[in-house]
Length: 435
Ligand SMILES: Nc1nc2c(ncn2[C@@H]2O[C@H](COP(=O)(O)OP(=O)(O)O)[C@@H](O)[C@H]2O)c(=O)[nH]1
Ligand SMILES: *[C@@H]1O[C@H](CO)[C@@H](O)[C@H](O)[C@H]1NC(C)=O
Ligand SMILES: *[C@@H]1O[C@H](CO)[C@@H](O)[C@H](O)[C@H]1NC(C)=O
Ligand SMILES: [Mg+2]
Image (cartoon, rainbow, N blue to C red; front, side):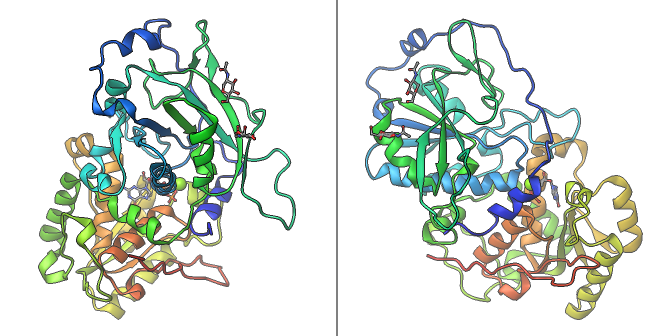
């Protein structure tokens, strides 16, 4: 089963090209696979393991990427049943939505956003820089570019399959004069692929396992366009184990908690949202969390309003809903997370004078980056008495999950704004944790 957030989201992106792959060409010929390897400690414990790397279609945002991590983690678990593998975490960077000027937002390690020890309790992972040090240089032996089937799906029949096929789209890699492949390797310009091949796939992540185990002996394999793989089992135990392991980095949680305490009078003890360092020992008790004395809102704007989607509210409609919820829930404060532009923000401030936002100073923004600020917003939203989000936004979906992990009553979580003229305003699906 591969339902959930994936398909509607991809549909929204159809026909939209946010960005053009820029030329990425460093100096050629400084490294070759041979000489870097000699500098490695021989016979280290890591020498036997194989490396799985992946990347996602460039226009996809942070929160769909978090979903793709879950799919690839399933594949890694399948591979581990047969041999020794480690997942190389794809550095963050160059995301379309990370538009704050003058900050360095490329080659960002996962540790800036997530707690690596927590990830490691689910599957073996290493940062890309560790891969470079450990594997003997900036070479990826095999790059598989995943794509669909040129002929599409045959009607009425769904079969899982993967086949080596000619590339359908123009390849985003080009051969240099040493016959190495150059391309976008997370901003590491010296990284090269030794072989790039297109594979047509239709199915869940683990259908890649036999190919990786049997069809190639490459020790480092990158799956590009990994979002073409579906979930092994969306919403199952494996899904939730991986999701629960994606604990936010401590420094971001601390900032969010301080904001909650100082501005929103929200503390874990009073709100019954106690955080435990070890996610494997946490089990949600239905309705146990109360949440802080505020309403939280995720109002997605930008590309969500450009398409004039009928499921996105006007600011007036959103403000009316917010006021009516505050009255009903007897809450005096509303925390608003949004990607609204300055003009929309001014309008919002007029419509909702009591609005509270997390507004980082320039220094904080430089430190946490756009990704970290988004996580702080999500963390604060996750701890509110009641949350309402935006239709088919993966940013909102990740907040739902965070609240599910924290034991909130689903009625306080799976809510979304309705469009002004939307007739059938279906509310988000409740995905219950499986332990
Ligand atoms: N700080 C902050 N950033 C946001 C907010 N909403 C959207 N963004 C930014 O816009 C991106 C939205 O892309 P994505 O994560 O793919 O979520 P989706 O497009 O809503 O499904 C986020 O990753 C953030 O960078 C918000 O409420 N607060
Ligand atoms: C993998 O190898 C098998 C057996 O040789 C072959 O039938 C299959 O087409 C290969 N698959 C891919 C994706 O290369
Ligand atoms: C590249 O990899 C593919 C798939 O494993 C293989 O069929 C092909 O022969 C390789 N090309 C080279 C030049 O090694
Ligand atoms: Mg997006």
